[in-house]
Length: 566
Image (cartoon, rainbow, N blue to C red):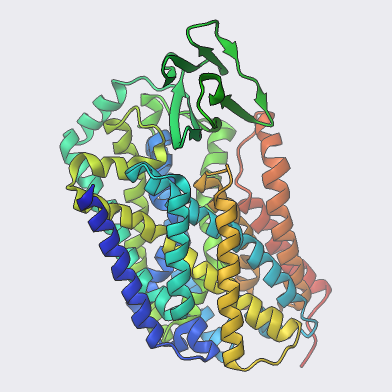
């Protein structure tokens, strides 16, 4: 444990030092704090844009996808790589050139100036969307921090949340864009190293593809449920599946939690099994029955693919279900041009030449990291068939093969993933509030020193709100991230792509696109998606219909309400 802690905290200290050094290079000018004076080179631009776009879902949520779905999980790799290709070969250079030409520092400001909007509607709507979705997005990263420390150290979940928040807020506040992008460079390199080297070690240990397949087939797949909560003074995460009950003891009493055919039941002190009802979608098992305080709450239910489907690129799916899966996985790539924390990297690049140089770096990183994460999940299924939570696949595999010092570095890689996104999102949200809302919507005249003070307060407030959400009972990183990713991609992606490629985009088109993209994401996610699935239809990710409708709205309203002639 000492070596593990040493590796983890040594890296944390290194990142803090990088943040402090970067802070000393940052002036009190808005352009310096938010875009690094637009002097960022190819390596930092490419790796920081890549790392900030992937986040904690890559090393936790995406690993879990590989664990459950197997080879079919590589569809998400294809979708993400295609998103990188579009961003770096079509969008990035145009965005850098256009934003530098009109002097914009934020996405709402760029859209306003690109369309000649005088109503301030684009800025106001853009700030609201960014603040709401960045808040949930940052919460997802802090959730990843809590899950990581809980799984490795056995610490209470909330400690990891607070450590992740404290470190991220500290260097983001003092160093601005330089601190964020410099630390992202190191964090992105550590992430990809972990996601390439550890799967390679596991692959060799298992004896290659034949060994992996044999190991997966040796343990029949069946659905299992993850329960989380407090037992006594300890936060516990347990796996419950049919025929494998979990026992909790407080001598001389014991409680046994089991599940058969989807029905949960408890047996106390060897008595008759008693069914546990599901209330508001959650099953709560009271520990007070055996004299322990607290309760366990059912969280996510996983349904691992059987071996034949696990090693199939279709995942055993056919027809509309397979089509829905492919569309969902490929549709994730639509979010890249609409994510403000990624777009900011292109705006901050030193030149279009640096963007061109960064293409190969970014695409190489994407293939290795995305493919490595799914591969890690597949190999973890073979190595750890009884893994309590698939999100722990990377960390628990590291514990099998590596010296505790290096396990600490792998844990640092998970923290790197969450920080590389959370820091960027905090900075983008701060810039939207200070530059767009306070400076232009409210029209308060602030000098740079006053603006910097407000910016740091916004970072702190957003961080605290994200901590509160992360400490709630919904701890499922993949869903948090995909919802926020969809909302941002649909709200801003169509307008940004059109703004750098179509001169007829009007303010009305941008407003309609943002409103429809944001609202469709919510409506589809909360109501429509599950209704379609319940009727046997495909599971379509909300980003796909939201992006399509937002793009249509941008074009239609630009024709109906054209921009004013200057």
